[in-house]
Image (tube, rainbow, N blue to C red; front, side, top):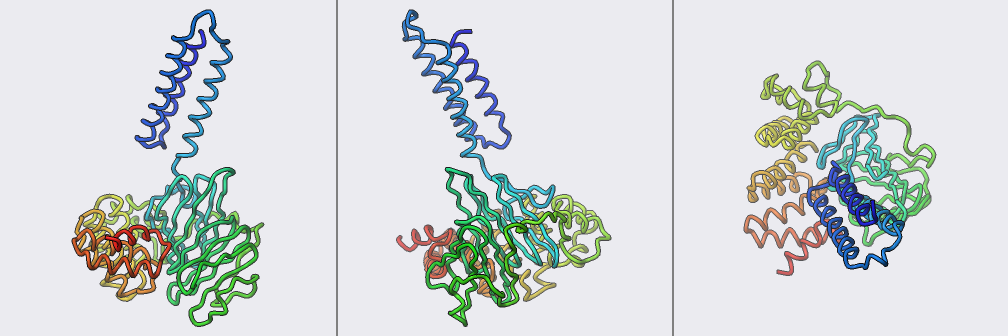
Length: 412
Protein backbone atom coordinates (compact mmCIF):
# COMPACT_ATOMS: atom_id res chain seq x y z
CA UNK A 1 0.00 0.00 0.00
CA UNK A 2 1.56 3.40 -0.99
CA UNK A 3 1.54 6.53 1.18
CA UNK A 4 -1.60 7.99 -0.35
CA UNK A 5 -3.61 4.79 0.06
CA UNK A 6 -2.32 4.32 3.61
CA UNK A 7 -3.30 7.85 4.53
CA UNK A 8 -6.74 7.43 3.01
CA UNK A 9 -7.37 4.12 4.76
CA UNK A 10 -6.11 5.41 8.12
CA UNK A 11 -8.24 8.50 7.79
CA UNK A 12 -11.28 6.34 7.17
CA UNK A 13 -10.53 4.20 10.22
CA UNK A 14 -10.03 7.22 12.47
CA UNK A 15 -13.22 8.81 11.19
CA UNK A 16 -15.17 5.63 11.86
CA UNK A 17 -13.81 5.30 15.38
CA UNK A 18 -14.59 8.88 16.31
CA UNK A 19 -18.02 8.81 14.71
CA UNK A 20 -18.85 5.81 16.88
CA UNK A 21 -18.02 7.56 20.15
CA UNK A 22 -21.23 7.07 22.15
CA UNK A 23 -20.66 10.11 24.37
CA UNK A 24 -20.18 12.56 21.53
CA UNK A 25 -23.03 14.77 20.44
CA UNK A 26 -24.35 14.63 16.90
CA UNK A 27 -22.96 18.04 16.05
CA UNK A 28 -19.53 17.13 17.41
CA UNK A 29 -19.45 13.88 15.42
CA UNK A 30 -20.35 15.74 12.24
CA UNK A 31 -17.69 18.34 12.93
CA UNK A 32 -15.03 15.65 13.43
CA UNK A 33 -16.06 13.86 10.27
CA UNK A 34 -15.97 17.06 8.26
CA UNK A 35 -12.55 17.95 9.64
CA UNK A 36 -11.11 14.57 8.70
CA UNK A 37 -12.68 14.60 5.25
CA UNK A 38 -11.21 18.00 4.50
CA UNK A 39 -7.71 16.95 5.60
CA UNK A 40 -8.00 13.75 3.59
CA UNK A 41 -9.20 15.62 0.49
CA UNK A 42 -6.34 18.10 0.61
CA UNK A 43 -3.71 15.43 1.15
CA UNK A 44 -5.01 13.37 -1.75
CA UNK A 45 -5.13 16.43 -3.99
CA UNK A 46 -1.57 17.30 -3.01
CA UNK A 47 -0.42 13.79 -3.88
CA UNK A 48 -2.05 14.00 -7.31
CA UNK A 49 -0.30 17.28 -8.11
CA UNK A 50 3.10 16.03 -6.96
CA UNK A 51 5.28 14.55 -9.80
CA UNK A 52 5.71 10.80 -9.46
CA UNK A 53 9.50 11.03 -9.75
CA UNK A 54 9.60 13.24 -6.64
CA UNK A 55 7.35 11.11 -4.44
CA UNK A 56 8.29 11.51 -0.81
CA UNK A 57 9.14 8.59 1.45
CA UNK A 58 6.33 6.54 2.95
CA UNK A 59 7.36 7.50 6.47
CA UNK A 60 6.18 11.05 5.81
CA UNK A 61 2.65 9.83 5.14
CA UNK A 62 2.77 7.71 8.27
CA UNK A 63 3.88 10.72 10.28
CA UNK A 64 0.99 12.72 8.89
CA UNK A 65 -1.39 9.93 9.89
CA UNK A 66 -0.01 9.95 13.43
CA UNK A 67 -0.35 13.74 13.59
CA UNK A 68 -3.90 13.52 12.33
CA UNK A 69 -4.77 10.86 14.91
CA UNK A 70 -3.28 12.97 17.69
CA UNK A 71 -5.23 16.04 16.55
CA UNK A 72 -8.47 14.09 16.39
CA UNK A 73 -7.88 12.57 19.81
CA UNK A 74 -7.10 16.01 21.18
CA UNK A 75 -10.29 17.42 19.69
CA UNK A 76 -12.30 14.67 21.41
CA UNK A 77 -10.56 15.25 24.74
CA UNK A 78 -11.02 19.02 24.83
CA UNK A 79 -14.68 18.97 23.77
CA UNK A 80 -15.81 15.89 25.72
CA UNK A 81 -18.65 16.86 28.08
CA UNK A 82 -18.28 16.20 31.79
CA UNK A 83 -20.65 13.59 33.24
CA UNK A 84 -21.14 12.56 36.86
CA UNK A 85 -22.17 9.60 38.98
CA UNK A 86 -24.01 9.61 42.31
CA UNK A 87 -22.82 6.92 44.69
CA UNK A 88 -21.63 3.67 43.15
CA UNK A 89 -24.14 3.13 40.38
CA UNK A 90 -26.58 6.00 39.83
CA UNK A 91 -25.92 8.09 36.72
CA UNK A 92 -26.32 11.78 37.56
CA UNK A 93 -28.66 14.10 35.70
CA UNK A 94 -28.81 17.88 35.80
CA UNK A 95 -31.22 19.13 38.43
CA UNK A 96 -31.34 15.86 40.39
CA UNK A 97 -31.71 16.33 44.14
CA UNK A 98 -28.69 14.71 45.81
CA UNK A 99 -29.61 14.39 49.46
CA UNK A 100 -28.24 12.53 52.48
CA UNK A 101 -29.66 11.99 55.95
CA UNK A 102 -27.88 13.05 59.15
CA UNK A 103 -24.64 11.15 59.65
CA UNK A 104 -24.60 9.79 56.10
CA UNK A 105 -22.28 10.40 53.14
CA UNK A 106 -22.96 10.41 49.40
CA UNK A 107 -20.04 10.67 46.94
CA UNK A 108 -20.52 12.42 43.60
CA UNK A 109 -17.81 11.60 41.05
CA UNK A 110 -17.18 13.58 37.85
CA UNK A 111 -15.63 12.15 34.71
CA UNK A 112 -12.75 14.67 34.59
CA UNK A 113 -11.52 13.53 37.99
CA UNK A 114 -13.24 15.88 40.45
CA UNK A 115 -15.16 14.51 43.41
CA UNK A 116 -17.66 15.88 45.93
CA UNK A 117 -18.94 14.37 49.14
CA UNK A 118 -22.26 15.45 50.65
CA UNK A 119 -22.57 15.01 54.43
CA UNK A 120 -24.87 15.48 57.40
CA UNK A 121 -28.31 16.26 55.99
CA UNK A 122 -26.76 17.92 52.96
CA UNK A 123 -28.63 18.59 49.74
CA UNK A 124 -27.12 19.73 46.44
CA UNK A 125 -28.04 19.91 42.75
CA UNK A 126 -25.74 19.99 39.73
CA UNK A 127 -27.13 22.87 37.67
CA UNK A 128 -24.88 22.80 34.61
CA UNK A 129 -21.90 20.97 33.11
CA UNK A 130 -19.26 21.96 30.58
CA UNK A 131 -16.02 20.44 29.24
CA UNK A 132 -14.10 22.54 31.81
CA UNK A 133 -16.19 22.15 34.96
CA UNK A 134 -19.62 22.46 36.54
CA UNK A 135 -21.97 24.75 38.44
CA UNK A 136 -23.39 23.29 41.64
CA UNK A 137 -26.11 24.54 43.98
CA UNK A 138 -25.57 23.78 47.68
CA UNK A 139 -28.96 24.01 49.39
CA UNK A 140 -27.99 22.68 52.82
CA UNK A 141 -25.33 20.81 54.77
CA UNK A 142 -21.63 20.04 54.39
CA UNK A 143 -19.83 19.45 51.08
CA UNK A 144 -16.20 18.39 50.69
CA UNK A 145 -14.70 19.09 47.28
CA UNK A 146 -11.60 17.84 45.51
CA UNK A 147 -11.38 19.58 42.14
CA UNK A 148 -9.15 18.19 39.38
CA UNK A 149 -6.94 20.66 37.52
CA UNK A 150 -5.50 18.98 34.38
CA UNK A 151 -2.28 20.50 33.09
CA UNK A 152 -2.56 23.07 30.30
CA UNK A 153 -6.32 23.19 30.73
CA UNK A 154 -8.22 25.97 32.48
CA UNK A 155 -11.06 24.75 34.68
CA UNK A 156 -14.18 26.60 35.82
CA UNK A 157 -16.05 25.30 38.84
CA UNK A 158 -18.66 27.43 40.61
CA UNK A 159 -20.82 26.82 43.67
CA UNK A 160 -23.99 28.73 44.57
CA UNK A 161 -24.31 28.53 48.38
CA UNK A 162 -27.33 30.50 49.54
CA UNK A 163 -26.54 34.16 48.78
CA UNK A 164 -22.84 33.37 48.28
CA UNK A 165 -20.97 32.53 45.11
CA UNK A 166 -17.80 30.40 45.35
CA UNK A 167 -15.37 30.31 42.43
CA UNK A 168 -12.78 27.53 42.61
CA UNK A 169 -9.12 28.31 42.10
CA UNK A 170 -7.87 25.51 44.33
CA UNK A 171 -8.01 21.79 44.84
CA UNK A 172 -9.37 20.75 48.27
CA UNK A 173 -11.87 22.68 50.37
CA UNK A 174 -15.00 22.29 52.51
CA UNK A 175 -18.25 24.27 52.44
CA UNK A 176 -20.86 24.20 55.20
CA UNK A 177 -24.21 25.98 54.94
CA UNK A 178 -27.27 26.11 57.17
CA UNK A 179 -30.21 27.59 55.28
CA UNK A 180 -32.29 28.39 58.39
CA UNK A 181 -30.00 31.25 59.42
CA UNK A 182 -27.72 31.44 56.34
CA UNK A 183 -24.71 30.39 58.43
CA UNK A 184 -21.89 29.74 55.97
CA UNK A 185 -18.28 28.65 56.30
CA UNK A 186 -15.69 27.75 53.68
CA UNK A 187 -12.30 26.25 54.63
CA UNK A 188 -9.50 25.56 52.16
CA UNK A 189 -7.02 22.71 52.57
CA UNK A 190 -5.11 23.13 49.29
CA UNK A 191 -5.12 25.96 46.74
CA UNK A 192 -7.63 28.79 47.14
CA UNK A 193 -11.24 29.79 46.45
CA UNK A 194 -12.91 33.17 45.90
CA UNK A 195 -16.16 34.02 47.71
CA UNK A 196 -18.52 36.85 46.75
CA UNK A 197 -22.08 37.95 47.50
CA UNK A 198 -24.00 37.78 50.74
CA UNK A 199 -22.64 40.13 53.42
CA UNK A 200 -19.32 40.59 51.64
CA UNK A 201 -18.75 44.05 50.20
CA UNK A 202 -16.08 42.70 47.84
CA UNK A 203 -14.90 39.23 46.75
CA UNK A 204 -12.61 37.52 49.27
CA UNK A 205 -9.90 34.95 48.58
CA UNK A 206 -9.54 32.03 51.01
CA UNK A 207 -6.11 30.39 50.68
CA UNK A 208 -4.83 27.05 51.98
CA UNK A 209 -5.12 26.79 55.76
CA UNK A 210 -7.64 29.64 55.99
CA UNK A 211 -11.40 29.80 56.61
CA UNK A 212 -14.04 32.40 55.88
CA UNK A 213 -17.26 32.70 57.84
CA UNK A 214 -19.23 35.79 56.77
CA UNK A 215 -21.65 37.20 59.35
CA UNK A 216 -24.01 40.10 58.81
CA UNK A 217 -24.01 40.89 62.50
CA UNK A 218 -20.28 40.47 63.09
CA UNK A 219 -18.23 42.16 60.33
CA UNK A 220 -15.00 41.09 61.99
CA UNK A 221 -15.63 37.49 61.07
CA UNK A 222 -15.57 38.28 57.38
CA UNK A 223 -11.80 38.21 57.21
CA UNK A 224 -10.09 35.03 56.13
CA UNK A 225 -8.15 33.66 59.09
CA UNK A 226 -6.21 30.52 60.00
CA UNK A 227 -8.49 27.64 60.90
CA UNK A 228 -9.65 27.43 64.49
CA UNK A 229 -12.78 26.44 66.36
CA UNK A 230 -15.72 27.00 64.00
CA UNK A 231 -18.58 29.26 64.99
CA UNK A 232 -22.26 28.43 64.40
CA UNK A 233 -21.39 24.77 65.09
CA UNK A 234 -20.35 24.37 61.45
CA UNK A 235 -17.75 21.60 61.10
CA UNK A 236 -14.08 22.39 60.47
CA UNK A 237 -12.23 20.98 57.45
CA UNK A 238 -10.42 17.69 57.61
CA UNK A 239 -6.79 17.18 56.69
CA UNK A 240 -5.76 16.62 53.10
CA UNK A 241 -4.96 12.97 53.88
CA UNK A 242 -8.48 12.00 54.89
CA UNK A 243 -10.40 14.61 52.90
CA UNK A 244 -12.23 12.06 50.76
CA UNK A 245 -12.70 8.92 52.88
CA UNK A 246 -13.35 5.43 51.64
CA UNK A 247 -16.99 5.51 52.79
CA UNK A 248 -19.22 4.76 49.84
CA UNK A 249 -22.54 3.81 51.45
CA UNK A 250 -25.50 5.71 50.06
CA UNK A 251 -27.69 7.05 52.84
CA UNK A 252 -31.46 6.55 52.61
CA UNK A 253 -33.53 9.35 51.12
CA UNK A 254 -35.56 9.71 54.34
CA UNK A 255 -36.06 8.00 57.67
CA UNK A 256 -39.55 6.69 56.90
CA UNK A 257 -40.08 2.91 56.81
CA UNK A 258 -39.22 1.23 53.51
CA UNK A 259 -42.00 -1.34 53.51
CA UNK A 260 -43.33 -0.37 50.06
CA UNK A 261 -41.52 -0.86 46.75
CA UNK A 262 -41.82 2.76 45.67
CA UNK A 263 -40.06 3.86 48.86
CA UNK A 264 -37.19 1.44 48.28
CA UNK A 265 -36.80 2.52 44.65
CA UNK A 266 -36.80 6.24 45.47
CA UNK A 267 -34.29 5.70 48.27
CA UNK A 268 -31.98 3.86 45.85
CA UNK A 269 -32.19 6.71 43.34
CA UNK A 270 -34.29 4.78 40.79
CA UNK A 271 -36.69 7.64 40.19
CA UNK A 272 -38.40 6.39 37.03
CA UNK A 273 -39.05 2.96 38.51
CA UNK A 274 -40.14 4.58 41.77
CA UNK A 275 -42.69 6.71 39.94
CA UNK A 276 -44.13 3.68 38.15
CA UNK A 277 -44.31 1.76 41.44
CA UNK A 278 -46.06 4.71 43.08
CA UNK A 279 -48.62 4.75 40.29
CA UNK A 280 -49.28 1.05 40.74
CA UNK A 281 -49.74 1.65 44.49
CA UNK A 282 -52.30 4.44 43.87
CA UNK A 283 -50.48 7.71 43.29
CA UNK A 284 -52.99 9.81 45.26
CA UNK A 285 -52.56 7.58 48.31
CA UNK A 286 -48.76 7.69 47.95
CA UNK A 287 -48.85 11.50 47.95
CA UNK A 288 -50.86 11.43 51.18
CA UNK A 289 -48.30 9.31 53.07
CA UNK A 290 -44.95 10.19 51.43
CA UNK A 291 -42.39 12.31 53.25
CA UNK A 292 -41.55 15.75 51.91
CA UNK A 293 -38.27 14.43 50.50
CA UNK A 294 -40.05 11.55 48.79
CA UNK A 295 -42.55 13.96 47.26
CA UNK A 296 -39.68 16.03 45.86
CA UNK A 297 -38.16 12.83 44.44
CA UNK A 298 -41.50 11.90 42.82
CA UNK A 299 -41.70 15.40 41.35
CA UNK A 300 -38.21 15.04 39.91
CA UNK A 301 -39.17 11.66 38.47
CA UNK A 302 -42.19 13.25 36.83
CA UNK A 303 -40.11 16.08 35.38
CA UNK A 304 -37.44 13.79 33.97
CA UNK A 305 -40.06 11.41 32.52
CA UNK A 306 -42.07 14.14 30.85
CA UNK A 307 -44.94 13.55 33.33
CA UNK A 308 -45.42 17.11 34.50
CA UNK A 309 -48.94 16.18 35.65
CA UNK A 310 -47.54 13.75 38.21
CA UNK A 311 -44.85 16.22 39.24
CA UNK A 312 -47.45 18.93 39.85
CA UNK A 313 -49.63 16.62 41.96
CA UNK A 314 -46.64 15.66 44.14
CA UNK A 315 -45.52 19.28 44.56
CA UNK A 316 -48.99 20.59 45.42
CA UNK A 317 -49.40 17.77 47.94
CA UNK A 318 -46.07 18.69 49.51
CA UNK A 319 -47.06 22.35 49.86
CA UNK A 320 -50.42 21.41 51.36
CA UNK A 321 -49.03 18.89 53.86
CA UNK A 322 -45.81 20.71 54.84
CA UNK A 323 -46.65 24.44 54.69
CA UNK A 324 -43.88 26.85 55.64
CA UNK A 325 -41.11 24.26 55.35
CA UNK A 326 -37.96 24.62 53.26
CA UNK A 327 -39.21 21.77 51.09
CA UNK A 328 -42.47 23.64 50.47
CA UNK A 329 -40.43 26.56 49.18
CA UNK A 330 -38.42 24.23 46.96
CA UNK A 331 -41.73 22.87 45.64
CA UNK A 332 -42.81 26.38 44.65
CA UNK A 333 -39.55 26.93 42.81
CA UNK A 334 -39.89 23.56 41.04
CA UNK A 335 -43.47 24.35 39.99
CA UNK A 336 -42.20 27.53 38.36
CA UNK A 337 -39.44 25.59 36.64
CA UNK A 338 -41.88 23.02 35.23
CA UNK A 339 -44.23 25.68 33.87
CA UNK A 340 -41.32 27.63 32.38
CA UNK A 341 -39.52 24.70 30.76
CA UNK A 342 -42.34 22.35 29.79
CA UNK A 343 -45.56 24.30 29.54
CA UNK A 344 -44.32 27.67 28.38
CA UNK A 345 -46.76 29.27 30.86
CA UNK A 346 -44.35 32.09 31.64
CA UNK A 347 -46.75 34.29 33.59
CA UNK A 348 -47.72 31.41 35.91
CA UNK A 349 -44.07 30.42 36.23
CA UNK A 350 -43.24 33.96 37.34
CA UNK A 351 -45.95 33.73 40.02
CA UNK A 352 -44.36 30.58 41.45
CA UNK A 353 -40.85 32.07 41.44
CA UNK A 354 -42.28 35.10 43.25
CA UNK A 355 -43.93 32.74 45.74
CA UNK A 356 -40.58 31.12 46.48
CA UNK A 357 -38.89 34.50 47.00
CA UNK A 358 -41.72 35.71 49.22
CA UNK A 359 -41.61 32.58 51.39
CA UNK A 360 -37.81 32.23 51.44
CA UNK A 361 -36.29 35.63 50.63
CA UNK A 362 -32.86 34.38 51.70
CA UNK A 363 -33.26 30.77 50.63
CA UNK A 364 -30.62 28.67 48.93
CA UNK A 365 -32.41 29.00 45.57
CA UNK A 366 -32.76 32.78 45.78
CA UNK A 367 -30.24 33.52 43.02
CA UNK A 368 -31.75 31.04 40.58
CA UNK A 369 -35.26 32.22 41.48
CA UNK A 370 -34.42 35.86 40.70
CA UNK A 371 -32.76 34.88 37.43
CA UNK A 372 -35.64 32.68 36.32
CA UNK A 373 -38.21 35.26 37.45
CA UNK A 374 -36.47 37.82 35.28
CA UNK A 375 -36.61 35.49 32.26
CA UNK A 376 -40.23 34.47 32.89
CA UNK A 377 -41.37 38.09 33.15
CA UNK A 378 -39.52 39.01 29.98
CA UNK A 379 -41.04 36.13 27.99
CA UNK A 380 -44.52 36.85 29.30
CA UNK A 381 -44.30 40.41 27.96
CA UNK A 382 -43.83 42.08 31.35
CA UNK A 383 -40.83 44.20 30.40
CA UNK A 384 -41.18 46.47 33.44
CA UNK A 385 -41.21 43.50 35.80
CA UNK A 386 -38.23 41.98 33.96
CA UNK A 387 -36.24 45.20 34.44
CA UNK A 388 -37.13 45.27 38.12
CA UNK A 389 -35.99 41.65 38.57
CA UNK A 390 -32.82 42.32 36.58
CA UNK A 391 -31.93 45.25 38.82
CA UNK A 392 -32.53 43.23 41.99
CA UNK A 393 -30.46 40.35 40.63
CA UNK A 394 -27.46 42.54 39.81
CA UNK A 395 -27.55 44.20 43.24
CA UNK A 396 -27.32 40.77 44.88
CA UNK A 397 -25.25 38.83 42.34
CA UNK A 398 -23.20 41.26 40.20
CA UNK A 399 -21.04 38.35 38.97
CA UNK A 400 -23.77 35.70 38.97
CA UNK A 401 -24.65 33.36 36.09
CA UNK A 402 -27.60 35.55 34.98
CA UNK A 403 -25.66 38.83 35.23
CA UNK A 404 -25.01 39.22 31.50
CA UNK A 405 -28.67 38.65 30.68
CA UNK A 406 -29.73 41.08 33.40
CA UNK A 407 -27.47 43.79 32.01
CA UNK A 408 -28.87 43.13 28.54
CA UNK A 409 -32.43 43.65 29.80
CA UNK A 410 -31.50 46.88 31.56
CA UNK A 411 -29.72 48.22 28.45
CA UNK A 412 -32.82 47.94 26.24
